[in-house]
Length: 305
Length: 311
Image (cartoon, rainbow over all chains, first blue to last red; front, side):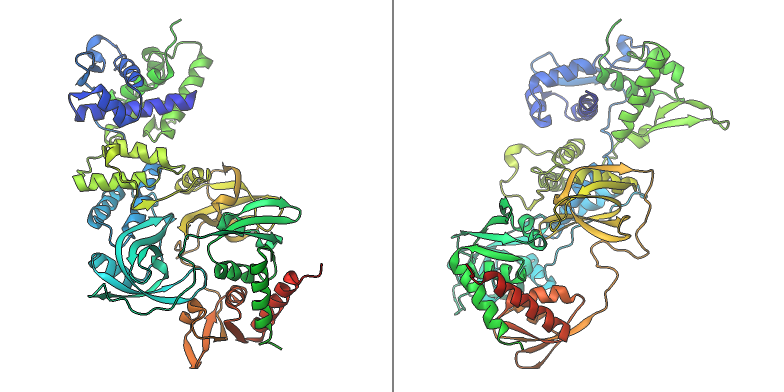
């Protein structure tokens, strides 16, 4: 019950100053702006006009007119003329998101993002820390600069595939950059694949502007990592390998043995993952992956005494 | 006895404490503000609860005390309470709105949405693009209490399930910072049970995070910067043979190429390097140091044993 009273109070403390700033706004618009029903809004308004300064005579109460023509006018807001300052956590959530946005190269309105950060930081007490959250990304400065300078031009990129750690040369036409949980991506038309692809910026190791986007150079086939085909891989995991359940979003099928199913988009990727787990993961299915892992390990072992 | 709604009592308290020129004494609050009727015990309980509620919302409610330690009264200073006018431009309001919407699927969504209302930057929902420039999806309930703990510099305790252990363990941690990296959220802090800096993945924190004690037991070391690995571990040189076209990320780390396809790299963590070499095998062969070669051989033997059919 107390959480509800607090939340409602908090809404009303925001509501009155907002109405002061928007004289004549309608009940419908206001309810939508605050994400509540018109009934809830009217209940809030009825409660607000019962409140005021001690004495509580008619001229000591908040006065709001909201019964004519569906519009709201604040006649006497008393002390409720300005919204409450942002709490530290409110300011921090906005700052985190703005800092993430500031790291996206080629974002439309980079300047406004930076000025928002500066203005928000000014509202926070100087003694409270804002450096308690780190959102640093690992995009190369060269790639950032190119996407910032002119997002319209085509780029020749060197891209390291996440699935088999091999490089490919591609020509892409960037369309949109975005970030998901701190990982920055670019949606682009890939002339090399003749289709739209999404690339992780931190895997673009080299980039240069090119004038003739229609000239498609020869490129090495890098496997099927970018196709949408996927298949299930079933693995048995020893304790030291169970972290992959979180990282790769695997489903746990049983705990004895600890058997999981995960979705793979390429055999090369799945084989690398299993090899990196150094025997703590055993491929149950598919048989082709099991055979490929065994063959890679045997071949590699021949190089050692 | 007339029942006064708690929200109404709180709102009247806020308005009265902002309007008063002098700190308002307890007796006057009890007498004048509707909803504080009842006996002494009931009043004390309600008033303490209300003060806590207002302060937890971030309202700067001050207690004024005379030199003898006697409480004179309470007051909210408008200058501290009010959000200064940030004079946001139209474009800045749009940026604030997109920043708040980045959290729309996350636990901090309501917090960001409320901030947006205060800043009067909420955009019409139809103006918000489906594809946001930034998206933060943290659904971990631990995020909000950890933000509070970091702000107030308090220790926390929680149940942590390591991926490689069967049962969770209880950790008591002095929090130093939060990181979002590679799509996941992490807490960095000093683990008191293990007496060292540790990183915790928020998705592995089980149940709730509790704030404990009154302060932070261990502060970050001088010069600590979140996101920079400290302290630097001693670096071991290693040599790898890499087949052309393979293991690009390893080759890019090399400091020199002694001859074709042979690369020198330095690694602060041989176990990490073993993982990278195994992942890229047979495209990479470890040549030195001997510990690395031994570890890779052992790992390959394990992989072979795990995949050899003896059924």
